[in-house]
Amino acid sequence: MHIKKLIVCLSAVVFAVAAFTQAEDSESSTNPSPVAYIYVAHTPHNSNTNEILGFSVAADGRLTPLTGSPFMEDVTSMAVDGSHLVAASRSTPEVNTYAIQHDGALTFLASTDYSQYNSSSDDCGDAGQIFFDHTGDDLYIQEFNGSSACANTVVASFKLNKSSGDLKYLGTDVTGVFPGENMAASFTGNNLYAYSAVNSDCMYYDIYGYLRTSSGDLKSLNFSHNLPEPRSGVSRYVPNLAATDPANHVAFTEQPAKPPACASGPLQLATYTIDSKGNLTTASTYKNMPDTKIADAYDMKMSPSGKVLALAGQQGLQVFHFNGAEPITKDTGLLTTDPVTQMFWDNCNHLYAISPSTGKLRIYTITPTGFAEAPGSPVAIASPVDLAVQPYPLP
Image: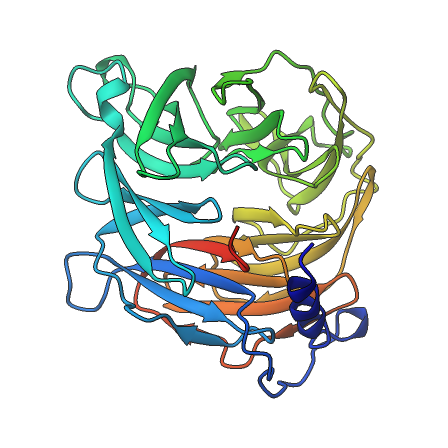
């Protein structure tokens, strides 16, 4: 770890307080180095096209607009790899690659027509989530209606040329329901496996596993998994959102169910251990899984440390302690009741969350021992669509 990065991150930690109690706003850090750059694709008022708002983030979470922001790029889903931002065009079946400059500004490099590789003759592929593996070398594009007769969902794998920004097609080996309900798959710490899940009204559901090959291509994984022990009156738990820690564990949201319908009861959280072949096992049961205050979950993200798990949805945002193979434990309650659709962490304990329905971006400093909302949060942003967070310093 860079010494500068360590000092900046430590200065961010002091804004959190013990036992997940709310802290007072603090003065802005005097350290001028940013801890991250963040990018928000949004639709301005009275506009038919999107643009990207860019911010640098201070150690206390305070935002400063980047030079050149807003960037007039009509895009939706975004992903970052350390030195590039890749974004799906809103109006064409293309993804654009931008170089992230040292000051966070974006410079256009190239566009790639991802739909040319799918098996549909009607050119009806439409990008959902796009996401990188841990190395940032390989990009995965979720395409709705990307298979024959425009009737299925596929994920295409690409290799990013770091110099030109061009994408080299690797293959489309994952078809069917992927990755869950428009969610990026979550990679294990060793970058070998990835997992997602889907729950369609407790009628169609499953956990999906993927193998990242040596070439970077993503393939479906033949693996086994069990389900948490259900309580009386519930026939099983149905998984949905997934989030991996840096080691060999993955968390899933669990909906009580009596298929083909959902059952009453709160959404709960299970933890699984991943073996060397990618198989999943859990000791989670209805007794040791914490209840959540989120009934309609949209996103779940693990902190880089693997110690804090954030869950967001229609009812707001809640944070939990993640303990590896041991049961997940309760923590904060709802940090906000604004509906939150997407979140990301940086490497300095900041969690960023967007709420399209309220037009807000919220920033929190969260550690296993405390949390605080950043000075200036929430930030008003008209109709935020997608969020990308690039930790600083850049590679």
